[in-house]
Amino acid sequence: MDKKIIAEIRELREKSNVAFVGSVNENSFPQIKGMLVVEDEDKREMKTHYFSTNYSSKRVKQFLANPKACVYYCDETKDKYKGALFTGTIEVCTDHDTKAMLWHDGDEIYYPKGIDDDDYCVYKFTAETVNYYHGLSNKTFSIDEI
Image 1 (cartoon, rainbow, N blue to C red):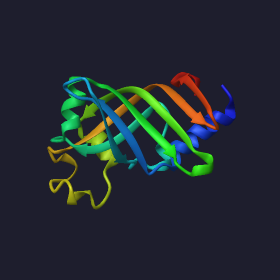
Image 2 (image 1 turned 180 degrees about the vertical axis):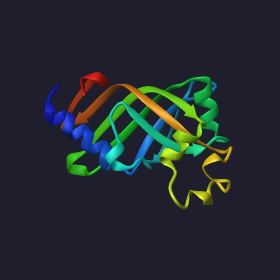
Image 3 (image 1 turned 30 degrees about the vertical axis):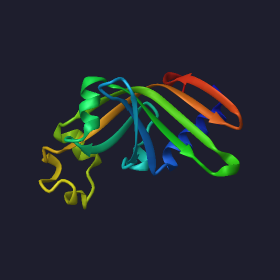
């Protein structure tokens, strides 16, 4: 795989503040949600992506029923639009160590009981493929290639 493309995908993931996370609902329809990227930038990798959310959310129920998912990062700048669509599965994590990994001061506003709040959980997304679009080129790669 072209090292330039790998670098562009990595940069897109590292610079994104928002990712669009896709799930499948109980009627097999796709659902999409913008989620803040709260991982520390220097800890972001290509195969595993983490997101924090409320355990009581409807998407948690969707992922528990069907873990198939996608995560999309994009640079929507008109003259240089780029997008990377990662496809894989999501695990809903409720263990202390995984939740502590994403915890930031101030999160108590959403989870008053802290890291161990029952309504706080983490999505652990594991990518299998990535589809990269830029400059009218569209290529799909196994995550192991990058």
